[in-house]
Length: 586
Image 1 (cartoon, rainbow, N blue to C red):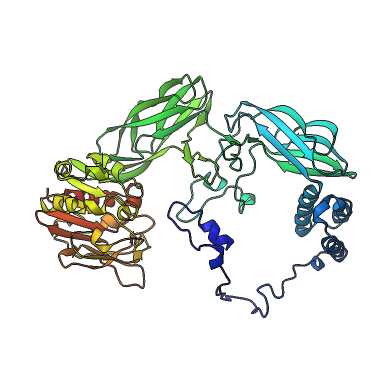
Image 2 (image 1 turned 30 degrees about the vertical axis):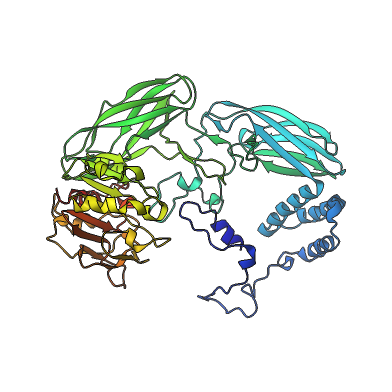
């Protein structure tokens, strides 16, 4: 039940399941034994999880059981003395990971029984290396157990505030301090994203972090207390003050670059040997940011000028810088990078904000990069309309091909507006998420009949009526091709879509990412021509990934191929084939 509720927080694809608690109950989950002795009564049969596995642990277990049996939830502080005695005995046991883990748990229990609360508020959520933070430490105890606050320690800075004060019940004690963030501190980034991974795997440079849900604190704080003659250390981190409207969504302190960068276009298409301008945008995080900006390209690619000076006066100020990039004479794919140098230190971070109503703002700072592709690409037509669906970057890819792209609303789907388009592309899952399309279908199909071309990308089965998808019968399934390397058979090699203006071959299906396609149609009207077939190993090849039909003077294309994945990843063959789709009839 808890897992089902958490899945309901997967907002991007509507993965929520379940319903009211009254619908929840027990459910059998299969368990397959792959190795080892079979369990008889419990999955952990034969595994000792008790204190008996620790030398001297039996006596500890008895003491713990006694406290649990007589626990007084109305006055938990009455147990602190006994818990401290258990803690003292734990400290005398031999070093053992289980003991260390239980010691940490016990410290949290003692803190809870004391009603001891700590907090540090920092004056801002984001800090640039070298800046000074103002910190406001607060501690309060809710019980009458004597507690002395002896120190606040900053382990990363190797300094502390050593000043003892007695805490009185329900009387917060505040200590103010300042802390310099070392100039060498790297900008914050989730530890599993710090280095480049491989397909399906993250590369973690510090194995000790594996398994953590978040990075360790940027500026860890240790609150040191004397309780009954024992030193109790509570580890925390500074956080900005809570938003009164969303007090539970406090951000963590984040180290940011003084200047962030981004390429105006994440994919850059080149003709072999032909130079073109590439623009990068800088945004200042702090006032008076100045230095040089440069593009980084691999061998065989040239960038001019080598660098440019920049000066940004105020936080949030933007400036764009254009470089001329020349690709090699042959076909090639390469990463382009951008960076700035400020006071001898280099930064290459792009600012990416992840915002959801139920989460604090998540800030990612990956390297600013673009994918550069030198390829033979021909196009026909000029003006394409794009009808957004659930969200993809296909419109930007069309602009990189050289098309003028107009984003369309439901109100734009009129014969007069559509008449000026050379082709129209419908975004992913548009028929699932847009309720305004059903009444516009006659205009769309009339546009095709009059000589237009529509390319409709994949939809899912959720809330879908078949007559919405195409001018002819078309039934979707849940079939997909999950292997991006799955062989592709060209079923209609002489069809215009495979020859004009780019001749498509097997090589154009190399280098695809993540999957071939999803939610393939499994039945369609005979007026559709199946162009391709592909399937995962051991499965019957699917033929519904690319269907093309003549309708009057125009073409209607329904395609479940994963263009929304391939085009942002600069897959050359995907660009060439998609150019053919929107060029049909031209």
